[in-house]
Length: 305
Figure 1 (cartoon, helix red, strand yellow):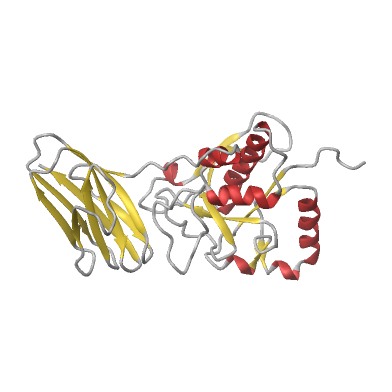
Figure 2: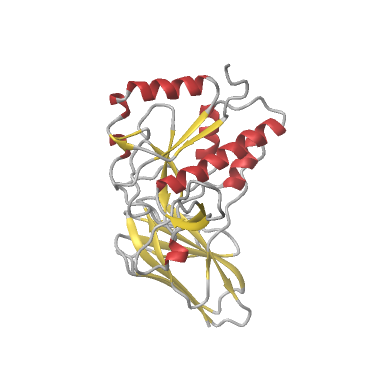
């Protein structure tokens, strides 16, 4: 008999080379599921290539998910491209990161054909790990919307909530390897699904005399940081250094600076910018970094003495 309660969310941690247009039966199955109100989340693929060349990532109506690693940067293996909707944690392992921190950990099976207690904890990486993170949030979104008194969301509405509620990438993906709107954020997605305003994102904090490395962004992109200046500080030094591209710095005490109204600024060519303030006002300072061009691997430093 027909399933009286078809799945509202399907995760497909699978894929292969070849555009979905070459797999009409696959697209027909996706269309049939979407016609029953099912949201379909799929892995973008692990070939560091354009996801449009893989299926089911390139099928119409799916939510294709890329992967980020431990640092928040694009995972080295993740497929990318205009068809990727957003990213989730997929893990990434290299020699600079312990395996315990670089992988996504979950329960696994030891391989026996009988239930003999050989379940194990396994660390894996891949868009196959990122995709179920997003599928789980899609299920939360659907549940939250219904509990808030709304009709079940359509697959397109679920996608819209997921995309609108992302948080910015900690490290911006390369301009030619986009990973969609940003990184999935369960809390913001649920709040939006319930009809509430999007919660404000926390601003990254600069710690006194500690480099914040790996900052990246696109031309025209603005990123805001917070720095605490203790009472009695006689000198404040805000700097950017290293990396590639061109950034400008804008800083103000107590208020978020804009390009037009910042109390202090440094707009020299390149990435070596510096704002120095004698006897600064104590309290919260805000530093805005603006990309005058695409920039990557830039470090920020705040020093209060």
